[in-house]
Each structure stands twice: as C-alpha cells, then as structure tokens.
Length: 335
Image (cartoon, rainbow, N blue to C red; front, side, top):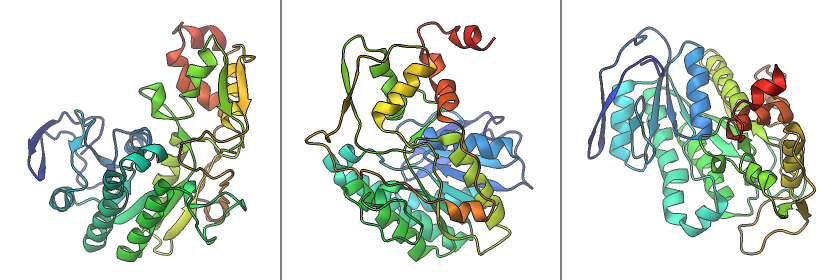
C-alpha cells in the first residue's frame, strides 16, 4: 500500500484491523510496517520510506486517522492479524510511551506498550522473517560517564529507561537478527508544540515574563527526519547483509541544555532572550534524568549507515516557523 497515494477506509472490530479501498499499491516493492505512525518519529519514518519507493503501512491507536490502520499493539491477536495480512519485509517499531513522568504515573500501561507489545512484535517478526527495527533511547544510560558506546553497560535512572531497556532485551531475545537503534531527544515537524520537549521551548521563548529552563542536563537534540533516514538505510542494508544486527546509536552532534536550546531558538527568530533564566538544579518531583547520556555513533559511521545531522538552528527554524504569529515570517526572512 502506498502511504500517500492510497485512498483508505478503515473498519474497526474487536481484535482486528481491516483496510479497504487500497489503491496504487506496489505489489513487487518492499513493504514496511511502521508502528506509532501518528507520532513525531513515526510520521517522519513513513514519509522517508515512501519517498524512497517502499510500500508503507502505518499504525496508530488513539490518534489513528485516514491512511493509517488503527491497531491496539497490546492485543497479541491484533498484532498477529496485522502481520499476517500485510506481510511486511521490515517493521519499524516507533510506538512507545516516551514521557518519563507519564511512565511513573501510569506504569502498567507504559510497560504493556514499551515491553510486552515489543516482545510480541519481535516474536512475530522472527516467525515471519521480517527485519525488526526497535527504536530505543539514550535514557538506558545513567549519564555519569559519557560518551556511551553500544557495548557499554546500561544503567537507567528511571522507569522509562528501564522499560525501554527491557524492550531492547525482549527484542534481541526473541528476534536475534533485529536492529536496536538508540536515539536521544527528538524534534521535527510537529502537529502541536507539546509533541516534543524541544519545540515546546517555543512557548517559553515567546513568553512575556521570566521563565526558568533547565541548564544542567546536557542534551543532543536530533531531527526526526535524520533518524528516519538512518532507519531506511539500516533496513536496506540489513536485508542484503545479515551481519547488520544488534545495537546502533544515532544522535545529533550539538550539545545543549534546554536553556541553550531556547537561546538558540530566540536567536534564530530574532527574538529577545533576556527573560529566559537558567536553572542548574533538577526540578523536584519529576523522574530522574541522566545529566549527560551522549551516544557514541561510531558503529553506524564506520558502516556508512549514518547521515550528517541537520544543524540545529536551521532544523528548528523549519519546525517552528508555522507557529510564528506572522505565517509570512519565513518568506520575509528567506526571500
């Protein structure tokens, strides 16, 4: 099924997903299934594979919409039915509960998605022979001794990191030929500012009064489009070379705190920043985060499977200009 070209109608029934009115399918082309296709990374992955000639099936749940399948990934029968019907060559598992504080509050639901659904997908991928790509996080590390290579021992500080680490272990236990791709904090073409902690900084940049921002934890903001390109390159290479398996790291190269990201955003849009106040202590009551979980990405680079990360200033401008009060801002600045 072509992600952009097909006109779809989705029929819902318990434990099943059904798709009708498929058009412009490419039966001879490679097929990819993307979970979490309604999310920031999932949308970018769907777009990247589609423009590269793949037939793309995307799944969502609460935010499912036309052109996507609604599938409860915690329902094992639904997963089996999905894979049996669409028989993907590659599965990119983007769906996750990625907010540490939400994982703390709703642990059972988060573990069901981050661990149990991952385990089921990995088992079914192994049975079907599909390449399984699991998206993980730099939060599997404690941040005390960066940078971290793929073989360094994980030691997550919070429940979110532990759930993603357990998802990694389930992936490789049930599907030894799988790929685990760890990435740091992501941003990209968001549907709402709150979809990424990076784009959400725009609200503080725009604020009229003083705003405090974390100036302790070192982050490596990474464009979801770059991660999507790495996923596509991994998929293409791994289908030809079975040695492409196991754990990989990909990350942006610019090191910034939230405060420094906000300053960069203000500078990119020629906005004042003297109301932004650096905070050098972690906020009480929130889940612990690593101070610096920088990822060493050498393995991808040596295999020529990486991409050069987009510069933060230009990439964040791409993402945020639609949220400026004057939607003509981009034309007035760049033309």
